[in-house]
Length: 520
Ligand SMILES: *[C@@H]1O[C@H](CO)[C@@H](O)[C@H](O)[C@H]1NC(C)=O
Ligand SMILES: *[C@@H]1O[C@H](CO)[C@@H](O)[C@H](O)[C@H]1NC(C)=O
Ligand SMILES: *[C@@H]1O[C@H](CO)[C@@H](O)[C@H](O)[C@H]1NC(C)=O
Ligand SMILES: *[C@@H]1O[C@H](CO)[C@@H](O)[C@H](O)[C@H]1NC(C)=O
Image (cartoon, rainbow, N blue to C red):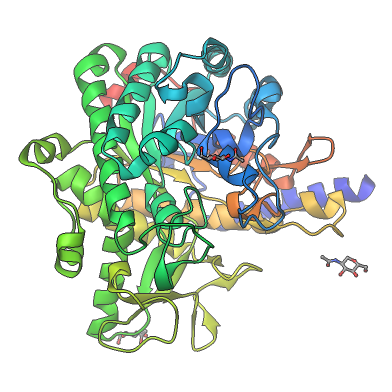
């Protein structure tokens, strides 16, 4: 305990030093606009647990993790997760302690519509979210709500193949309508989809996420069926149109009265060309188009990126004239999840020594965290996670320039800590690396804001350690450590840091919807 106290003291001193060298240390020069949202992010399947109680239906992730074929490294699932379903009040107290003014979460589709539009509304599920939103607002914390964060009803998968069918658009609109109607008096920030640009390739190309469909050389799972070369583009197409349907509905039926905002969240890794060659620079452009602009170009410009059209030809589905009209500027804000960066090497003109680049439908490029054995940034135990704060500024600036400075939120950013059973609790909570990571990334973000990027919020992933998909419980991202045998939450040093940081740079309390609208 004494040691812990000493370490805390040490942290205070460290923060003081960091603070003095920091570019964002003067209140008057705060780069963050008034009403900037500082929050933490979460998702239903990773947090809630309660997977089959109070009338909840089976989701695709319930089906996948229970099916015995998932590749989750510790064989775990989200049945209990961090039991947020039962502990939400305690967790909101933790949010209050951090003094955040917003909380990003997702609604579990099957908790309120167990069988999509083919069954009844589940009122106990509605009741749960009513209580959750009310409890947040009581503490002055704005809910920032995602409709689809990877989990969807298994019923829709069974009936018509989920996102592969245009019928999914009707289901998504039905679900979105219910949410706007029921919660829209209190929820002013809506996100249709979280990271469809990861969900789709993982579900329909490599097959390591549900519905685990894949084929040929791109398969990374033992899929029963699928077409890795074609299906990702069909699923993405239906998700893009589902997004547009929900936005159209919100704008025509609810927005005037409810006065909220609606957008989509994508993950963007920053891509640096491996060399100064034109081929590698074009490969980095292709990488951005095949992973990010893939979704945003249609939603904002009404068409897929040129790079994709040129390479994919007829594999890429087409939008009808009517759909194109609905798609243009079909969002109020762009959500960006930024964690890491990698080098990109051309595989179109050069032969690549990797499984990547073996198919043109992936864009014919290869990514790597290293160049000649040197990592792009500080490396971590995870090959995919190299620390590159400059990528934060570059990503935000890229999105600003490409999409005419559409309002942005940094909807996720966080530090992955490997779980080691030999660590003591003390080791687990002394997360200096996380503090340094966030400090540097927020500083890079503030540089982008100073240079004119319209960024309106930052959400750290995550409040708590939680179920990290394919990594199960083996990676920890929380400001609070979770002991999975007791579910006890223990603050890490980063929790103290975030609280101080917010207190120093923001008006923590949200000052009302009118101010939000003023700046939009
Ligand atoms: C997953 O869904 C399929 C199709 O409905 C079903 O046959 C299977 O039993 C389900 N698996 C689990 C573990 O519930
Ligand atoms: C590219 O060229 C610039 C300017 O000549 C140089 O500073 C940089 O190191 C080069 N980058 C690579 C990857 O070779
Ligand atoms: C934990 O400690 C034991 C005994 O020292 C060692 O054998 C084991 O490899 C360690 N586990 C990890 C994950 O480092
Ligand atoms: C907040 O401000 C105080 C007083 O200036 C300073 O001691 C502290 O280091 C700052 N904390 C953070 C996290 O920036």
